[in-house]
Each structure stands twice: as structure tokens, then as C-alpha cells.
Length: 170
Image (cartoon, rainbow, N blue to C red; front, side, top):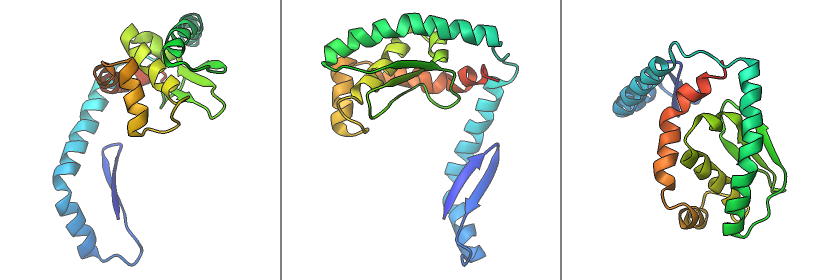
């Protein structure tokens, strides 16, 4: 059985044969987790209330800024890591800040241009480290912290501000 919080609702997934008592016990056992995530969900909703989505023109401008700025940061950190990335693509994504394909191509969200430079660098380093480790193992994070010791600080900033930043996409 599993519990999910979506749009302020508690969703329970259980096998067809599960008894009501089992579901009730799960909900009781997880009541603190449920309350915490419902409150977090509400705070995120409040954080994005009234945020104006970016216009197409503004998104295009952010895309151009990212295309001008990010390749230099990629080159800088690729040299420190000793990796050779492939193509760099800029997109307006609703769920990701960056990604790295198995071919070594990097994708970045144009909304990164709305974040501090240190946050941008943390995402660049994260994606470049996937050229050495295509996972999120200890070895991967050892490499991330070797290059960017303050990674946790900027990763936390991005996680905290993600709802309002992503809300800019409308």
C-alpha cells in the first residue's frame, strides 16, 4: 500500500483484496507524515498564489540568456572534472532543472536564469558529474562535493524556491 498527497488530497493505493482495517491502520500510522505533507502542500500553494506567468517573449529572452551563459559555466566545470560533454540544450521544463543523457548531452531549464549564479553552478556541476557516474551513488556525490563543496546549500535553495519559480511557467 502507498500514500500520496496530490493537490491537497490524500490518495491511498491498496490492493483490491486489502481490508478496510489495514488501510485505516496505515493512515493512522502515517498520520504525522500526512499532516506534515498536507501543510507543506498548502504552503507551496500559498507561495505561488498571485505569481504572474512569464510571457512567451520573456521565456525566449531567458532562453537566449541561458544559451549565452551556460556553455561558459559548463566549459569551466568540465575542465575541472576532466569530462567532455556533448550538446547543450535549453528548455522551459516544469519538473527538471537539468539532465544528462547517456550520450553526454546536457539539458538545462531556462528558469535557472532567475536563480543566483551559485545555484546555476550547482546544477551544472550536478549534471556534469553524471558524465562520470550515471546515477546518484556515493561516488557521484563524492565527485559533486569535490568540485562544489557548498552543493547542499544551493540545492536546498533551489528546492525551497522551486514552487514559485516553476509557477512562472503558468
